[in-house]
Image (cartoon, rainbow, N blue to C red; front, side, top):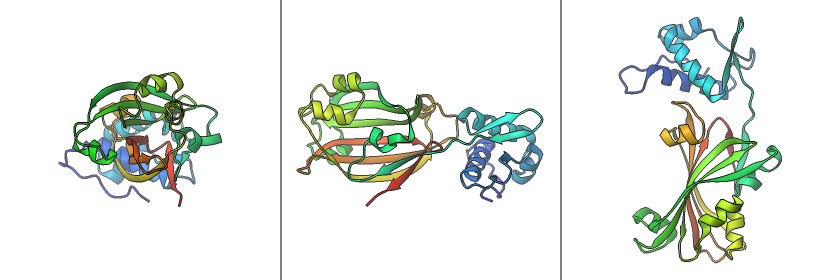
Amino acid sequence: MAAQKQVQRQTGVALWRQIADRIRASINHGDFDDTGMVPPETALALQFGVNRHTVRSALAALGQEGIVRAVQGRGTLIERKERLNFPIAKRTRFSQGIGDQARETRGVLLGASNERADAEVARRLGLPEGTAVTRLETRGDADQRPVSRATSWFPADRFAGIEEVYRRIGSITKAFRELGLADYVRSTTEITAAHADTADLGDLELSPGAIVLVTRALNVDLDGLPVQYSLTRFAADRVQFTVEN
């Protein structure tokens, strides 16, 4: 079972958060599939070496995430919500990647700005530091449920007005097409995991302690010129990645 070890004290991470993380991991590993229920609070308290109040706080956080649900007289039920399979491939697109796994997908513009590329963005986009870029803050929804939030940078001269086009149609691919870029491909994708930050909690409707999968991705046109650098954070309990050759 994935959550057997007792929690670590004096690490700077709240005990209830550590317990929530371990219960979430156990659920993801299928450790409780035989019963469909999380073990009783008394058993969890003994397992983790904490009091029942701490366990309740962990379960309450998982309940806010929609991972578990308290059932009167029965205990804590695991909510079976299948993850969306998101392919990382040569042509990675949010709506096409989700495909028929959701009845509706949409992109929401959370914010936009024109700025000067810092060293990291300039390096990724192959531009001199200080070059004008457009930054979009977006969220990807599937069936009206937030799945991802992204910060993307584009060369401002080449894609002038992309923020207004995206605001209107909610798709990077369609915005590119409207601005003269018919096709593009994924050059690189780096994947890591992290705890949700404050913005994740609000935009992705997560609770403290939730895990997000983080991708750093570069898209290029068919001549190999960078067109988009993105930092995207996915709710880990809602998606899984398939890396396609």
